[in-house]
Length: 146
Image 1 (cartoon, rainbow, N blue to C red):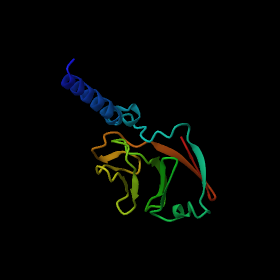
Image 2 (image 1 turned 30 degrees about the vertical axis):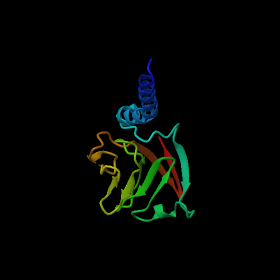
Image 3 (image 1 turned 90 degrees about the vertical axis):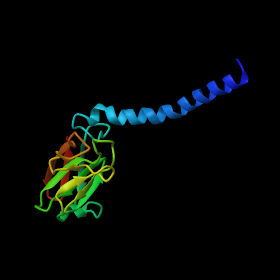
């Protein structure tokens, strides 16, 4: 093997090794089954936690339009006063979801996807809905569970 052939082959191999993780992460986000079946926001295990709405960290949920993100789940109080809990991870490419109280929807700033209060897709590029979680409010304790 000539010197130029060696360096050419070495450069191609090094380039492929460098790009493999990048290409792998792109393809995973595009084909990950958790993003295509409405379970976006894989929380790595069973979901069951309680928020104390009397503490400063979660007291914003006592007001219409307030929201918090806990364990990759966004909990928000709508303008009608109801509480909702959805995955805080966009089903399109895994970006963070925020609550837009004035519009009454959830928004992903990365590519502009919008989701309804029930997690349904209002507009894409996201094609799958956000996972919705159950809520149980007892006094100032808000339980979020699957």
